[in-house]
Image 1: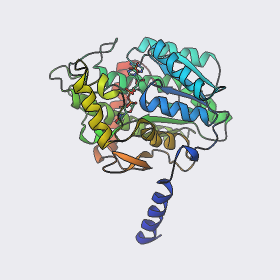
Image 2 (image 1 turned 45 degrees about the vertical axis):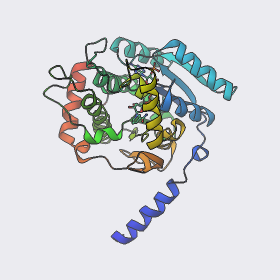
Image 3 (image 1 turned 135 degrees about the horizontal axis):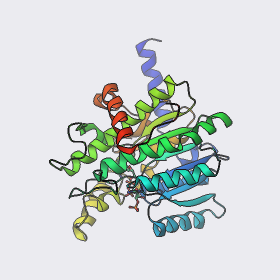
Length: 331
Ligand SMILES: NC(=O)c1ccc[n+]([C@@H]2O[C@H](COP(=O)([O-])OP(=O)(O)OC[C@H]3O[C@@H](n4cnc5c(N)ncnc54)[C@H](OP(=O)(O)O)[C@@H]3O)[C@@H](O)[C@H]2O)c1
């Protein structure tokens, strides 16, 4: 195909994708989904729409009462929705192990794992229960361990279902300014809240593509995909950078983010697209199509070149195995 013809195809594809809405979600009946950080923001809206499409959704939340509130809200909108709550704290390897063990003990397949939960730019450095810097520990290491421990259930889905199971990890445009601080991944020497967040979101992408490479090398039938929501006015901004600054300042920040970004439900669209659209490709990365990917409809987007650095991805994988003590079966 000539470059010109390919360009036309891309434009046609982009215009088709730009019309993508929650009404485009194919039926998800018979699928089991685990979604981290499901009680709030992007995770809540993604859970709601997947449940509406017929999936059985396990809301993986760290806070029981917030999880119950989300569950009740979904049931209120959709009586009969197949949603349940399970406690998962990604800042604790013990909690991750317990959560995965409980799920595997059910003997069920897992069709879709959405690694969505996240924390952002705490003003002061803090650590997880295992002593990892909180953003690297929660956003990357926690999801690395969770995916590895649940991998047998994804392989089970690969053996039982016609559609390939997916691991979808939620990154951010923040990855663009990120770099892997391999000399001090935990920011013990000089903590910078935004550099730590950017690194964790870059790690989400490096993880996705290393996972994709290993899946292909192993001839396995699981898909690794990434997405980002653009900019959406969620709790992320208050619980992270707004922490300790309640009141007017937090409200102004949320308002400003609302102006440049988009509502939470719209932010969930690229995640829903990457999670469900049949045309999504292995190793694909999806985000909004407008205003520097801040907002808009889901399209395939391009990550910065440092996010596709295979050597860095392999190095991060090895370090993640060492730090978490968790390895993937079959990879
Ligand atoms: N909003 C944006 O503009 C934006 C932009 C780019 C990327 N993202 C990404 O989108 C994802 C979702 O964020 P959001 O914007 O929807 O923010 P949010 O509303 O604050 O949701 C974050 C979710 O993660 C959960 N969480 C945090 N730490 C956890 C832990 N240790 N264990 C389990 N769950 C934990 C939170 O639980 P609690 O409610 O208990 O705190 C909450 O449910 C994140 O990965 C974020 O990096 C967001």
